[in-house]
Length: 482
Image 1 (cartoon, rainbow, N blue to C red):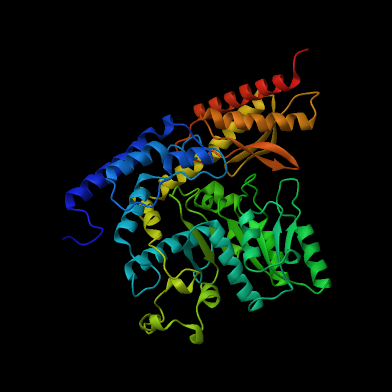
Image 2 (cartoon, rainbow, N blue to C red):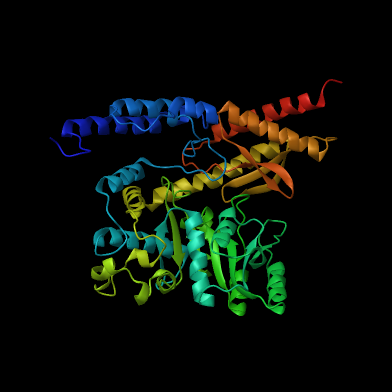
């Protein structure tokens, strides 16, 4: 009798071949498929719910089920015409990296278990650190995404500036900061009176005068300011906060400066991005998500810090709390890097593999070309929208994002809001391109983030043509005859 949970070599080969064919077909036909489909809860249950299986099902049948019912019925953020949220364009080399990571199942929590894998992660972190302009004392850790990176940054900042929990501590963000930051602060026990959403200027950048005023007000009222969160490309508009001014203010006030660059920090690899992100390297910590503008599959985020010791000070266990079963690990030389001492997880996979493999395979010149597409396509969309005349630009193309509203003389703002909402629904149902709205200055606006490296100007033009046609139809229906 064979051991449990085993396949023969032929069975493994057949299953692997079919799975590989499915992935290759996805890469080859992705552009021809709809950008998004969503099932109702009832539809999903009818197609996919089963009781716990006692007997086996041929894996070929299960792959066919996935191909028919699961993979098509989802948003596809790797689609060249997926312009909503922040897309996650991928590349095949990184997909292979994910497969190799899972297949070899390397535990990458400490050096003793994964010396070579840990060295690759340290190398990747060095590449990212150098690009962001942080000093040689810095390093970081790869995590699941921006949410975990932002939460971990606040833990490091709290330990470095406060020495632990303080009920009077205050964190300052802009009103454009990603929701993951506020969620992380709540998880870490920061009450509403410890979280400040500071106003932004007319370009949606954190207002330094408003921030300075808020800090002074809190100090005068017995609070303890300790951290400012800036943005390197907000999700809403691609806005970049003034890093040099913020760094000067934080230096005067003794505050930690964290930059949430989950989306935009990767642009620093390009000359244009480096200019736009001037001063990024003055931060104490930076969040960067390679599964966004570095074209990696989910999940891959990164936290970088100016001084690697701030992570080990925040996350390593005291001698009294150290796990007995890690005694053999802790006996090894101090220069070994144990990533469980830099973050929340003990058990973690070889996350660096896919990024390392793709960067080595393609070279950074190709990644720069891919990043530039995002800049260029957002600018092309803005040009077409301005030329049409029925759209008003809310925020010009910035960091690969442009926002805009439907415009008609004599129509109320509320009427135009309704047109935008219904047009967004029409676009999603149409499936050609994924375009969704956001709220800016209290009003809905469409938002395009065309950062897939295979996006082209013809598809941008067709997307805007469809948006315009749907908006015209919705406007005419809401106006009525006469």
